[in-house]
Length: 72
Image (cartoon, rainbow, N blue to C red; front, side, top):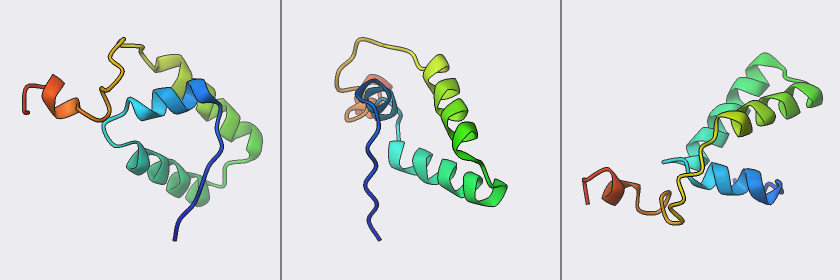
């Protein structure tokens, strides 16, 4: 199954900076379905994610995270 999400660009950029953004979103969806989050709760959750996101200034961090961690 393939699912496409349309999210605001600033949030997409922050999700893209995560080591495994797809797995992160899948985890959120799984927890939401199990916990029954409503639309307002989803937006609150996304705002909380946005509030802890850090702009590292590194444009390819998600793609080359192993390099920046010294493993590549």
